Image 1 (cartoon, rainbow, N blue to C red):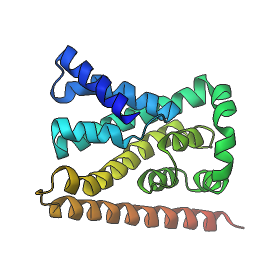
Image 2: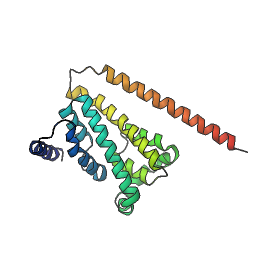
Image 3: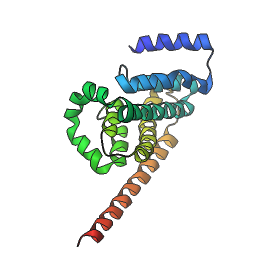
Image 4: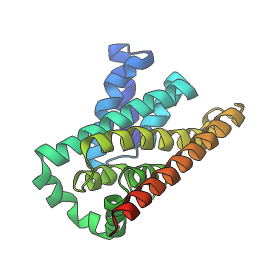
Length: 202
């Protein structure tokens, strides 16, 4: 499947003469297809971006494509094709029941965590979010941050292979700071919720 994707991509780029960020005209639709059916890993699209645009621009393009695909799949599942998605994927979602409960409880933070740690496919995360009590605004925020975290981590892991001479110190340090800020925000948010719940207790 990856070889087929590469052949189609090479043909499309040669035919259209796409360059730079215009490659997103190809990769965003591919990301949506991947987000619905999971025919191939999203890493294929990330590697394509990196090989065409370089590490930093490639990761930025991957973030744009992944975020757009996550929103399209969420909206399709929640508002347009909920019955079809339920018939096709509900069986697979059952084995992730504990994560569904965690998503209902922690909302945006669960989405960010699941996007970052490769516990389950990205398309299932979008499906689970669509059938959860997560609101559109909350999902939009978690989709942005979660995809950023996921692609940032993948960039660190893959950069040494694609660009073996690249110094990854700044990339790793900035990601560590990003995770630290997320952790602080999570703790502060939970404290606020705990205080509000305590104040409501008679």
